[in-house]
Length: 131
Image (cartoon, helix red, strand yellow):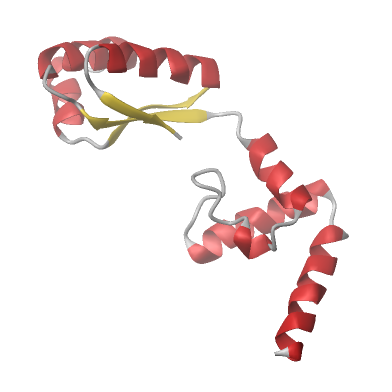
């Protein structure tokens, strides 16, 4: 056990001496290695030893968000129309997106835009997540 503990301490020490850029690269490497994303549920934070700088990097990096339609609700037609308006897709593509939920409606947008889209869709009965 003491070997494990000293190994953890060595990892924590190594992380605490890294620059923000090095931490960012570490987080990306861990995401690729384990198939997770730090921005969705902060899955990589426990892997980095709960170091405050690593958590700050994961939070600071997210400047682009995605709106995911998880359920169209009971009013599919208004949801399809709204998705069409938001995405610029044709009617058939919008219907396919709504029918295939959970699907990403729009990605690479600001938090404000994501909140606006979420509000539009939830007002008509859809269930939406921002990632």
